[in-house]
Amino acid sequence: MNSVFARLLLLALAVWLLRAVGPETWGSWALATNLLAAVTIQAGLALGGVRLAGWSLLTGFFWDFTTFSPLGHHVLVIGAVGLLVHSQRGWWKGASAGEQAAGSVLAAVAFFVLDHLFHEMETRAWNWPFPLSVAMILAGVVNGLAAVPMGWWLEREHRPAMSPRRPRRIS
Image (cartoon, rainbow, N blue to C red; front, side, top):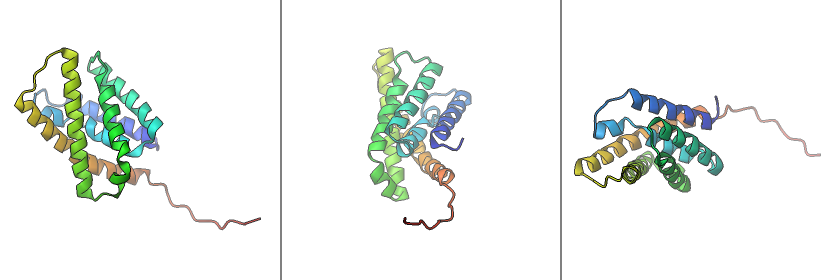
């Protein structure tokens, strides 16, 4: 599996497994172990429009199915944040590591806020306690910072091998 699409699917599965066997607690640690935001950021940077849409649908429906989410809000959250990051990838590629980390943190916080908002719409439970807001910011920081080395790894693994250049004949 050398394609970036397949690697991102495997990363999404790996973070789902981490979340599935992770802590059974509420708050920042439970959200922080959900590294799906970091993978979504990298998908937005690495994939083109159609492939990003396909990845968002596959990953989102998998997360919705495995978390028994009837609304399908993971598809919406993954697609929205992936599209947001994709629309900014020109800036992102030229940014320094610190700027990339800051952008990743903001995108991850947006991911968790949207996820929580759609979840509350789904359950019709409109509460926004302060500890949960702090947990989302902490989870966004963890995911944003995790997205940077994840991107470096994906870029290093995807870099094609250099082949010797052959002179072309003009006929």
